[in-house]
Picture 1 (cartoon, helix red, strand yellow):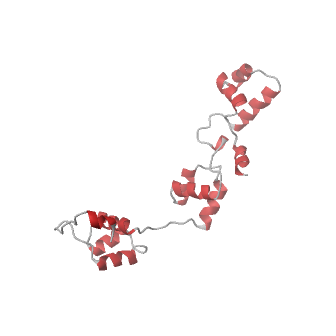
Picture 2: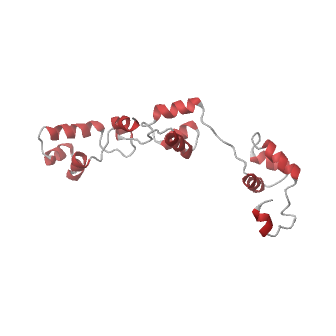
Picture 3: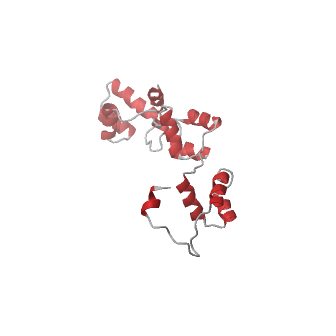
Length: 172
């Protein structure tokens, strides 16, 4: 018996609602892994929402695990593709990919040219640093690259911009 069984009045059976019989519940438990919810609903002559609610009530769930090829694809493309893109390509949820990365202590951040919001290339960023080290002023660099002065300053002094090769610093 469940806690709810003691405190809630049982619902009456009507033409729109009927109780789950024991044989229906055992059929659901035994065939949930092999059949889709829609097939089970058709077989039991129940609504889709009724079957889903019963599955939730019984605590049944289909566990999706990553195959070895999926794991290899994730490891090969981390740092190059975003987690959403990796998840879409392997047909898995983004939360599942993130959970795998966190469980295995993998860095899933995307830096530099691989990041989707990158405006200035890694080569420009490295060249800006080299020019500044050679003694060229920030205003000259910003006018040569046609980049705002504040952006060049943040690249040089605030260390906000990362290049794609920085990914490997975070992995180790």
